[in-house]
Amino acid sequence: MHRTLTSGKCSHAAPPAGRERLCRYVTRPSYACEQVAWTADGRISFRLAKPKRTGETHIFFTPVQFLRRLTSQIPPLGQNLVRYHGAFAPAARRRKEVVRETPPPRPKTTSQQDTVEIRGSWAAMLSRVYEIDILECPKCCGRLKIIASIQEPSVIDRILRHLGYDDEATDLPSEPVVVYDAGAG
Image (tube, rainbow, N blue to C red; front, side, top):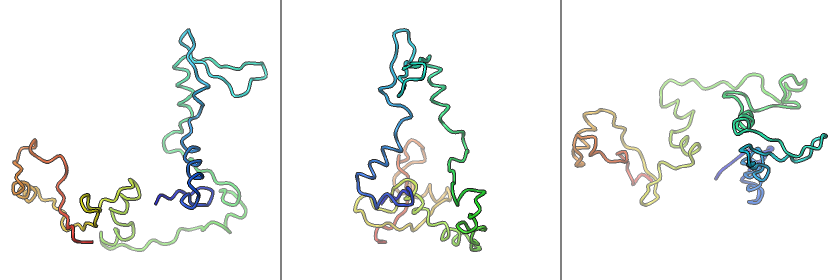
């Protein structure tokens, strides 16, 4: 299930028409294709939505000028795109009433296992980011359980030789060899 927070509501609660409208809004281009046309002299004509006070209805650009205008709408890398207003604004008088001043303390981790439990498993993170379930068996759709993480080159070579692959890199399978237990589920 995909969840997107929009206006304080999750989009999975909205009807399909609402989700479609949200997707269309988010993916809309910065201009309508009908507004742009090539002229006979190789320039780009951009039709304005409303005529200017001077009566102009079109602006003409060279292709480089048009691209420069379009790319100026792309925010610089790392720029904060979230703006807070009202009680959430940085200098709001009532901000202390709605925003916690200090973040909650993070639990102390003593081992890598503790860190994984706090962050979530790698499979859950892959599922959230890429919307794939890496632990689903491609053949039977059952749950897989990882039983080994083999990193020693000598052990990997021995397993590959046992599976019938030579030491040549060209003979290696195109898909990675991962050891799973299909009956884990």
